[in-house]
Image (cartoon, rainbow, N blue to C red; front, side):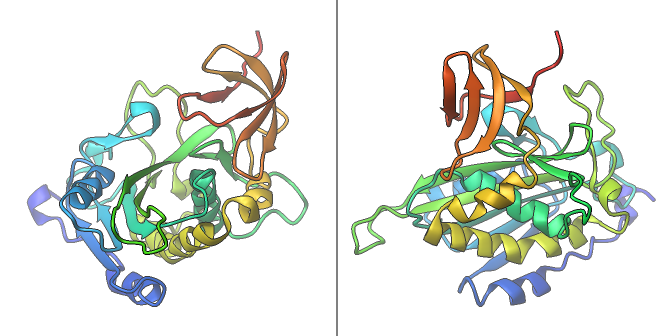
Length: 283
């Protein structure tokens, strides 16, 4: 099949709209064949005064962004096959939470629970894991996807005097095996977790629960998600290396989403978005 004969991907936009609109009046779903970055596009719209709740999905992202400025590209090697190899979307809406700490962790919990609703009955580690602060991994320390949260301050909207923000939550997930070369770490894909999943089916599972998660986070913060994150915390109990050179042992996350790491200087709460963490490899 060549690119000109490719049939449009049947995205479940109407079903998602029907499920989400009762929670978010004015909500819209938009599917783009290609865009530089869904997060970047929604942030452009906010600067232009467009602040309606929006789910923006693309079949190809040409300049995607990850945490700490890393790139995220939809795999172009599948072009012309009719397949959508990655699920790439951003959800944007005005939000006024009591505090913002831990939002990316709450999003990770929502995505993981939507994709793998049931934990192993025998108490074994789940296959789908969360790596602080914004990655989803499959067993074997293989990255399945990532989360990027950005905000823009909105003025003159809240009579209580609070400063609401427009939050953009970007999610990128490998659906099919990643064909790119030179990756820093081994990758995983959704088909390994569930052979029936396509990008549209995964999106339909994720969208409404993610909206509910953001609204719940705005009301209650990260604390209600803490224990659920702990069930999938891939760093807990492991030796880790911080990007500032320190070593320690991860001890889960606090009620406000800080990573707890016991180092030679004692227990530390890691919150900075400029600090990255990876499992420590044996010397």
